[in-house]
Length: 100
Image 1 (cartoon, helix red, strand yellow):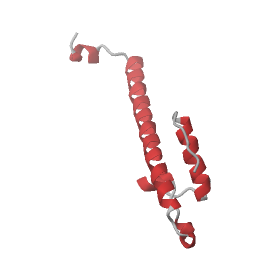
Image 2 (image 1 turned 30 degrees about the vertical axis):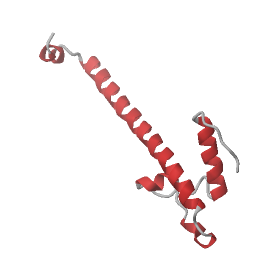
Image 3 (image 1 turned 90 degrees about the horizontal axis):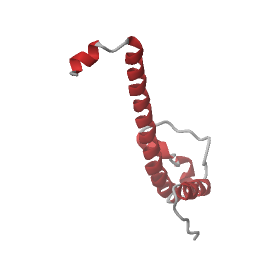
């Protein structure tokens, strides 16, 4: 069966299911990309924020700020909280955490 035959034999319900599958795949890929961006941003923000002097603590960066998203100060406001969040992420991904 050729692509031309498949296209013209597609019912509206089947076509809608194909569109839904395509949209779901795009949403999944966007979620995966956001998760990867968050992981990279988490590492960058922990390093950046831990090196800030006390006077500039108001210039802390959140993980997704590295990728152009606006600030959300709802979570992990202090460097210590960010370190705990990074340790929790490492544990969640199967890693181990060494306390210094």
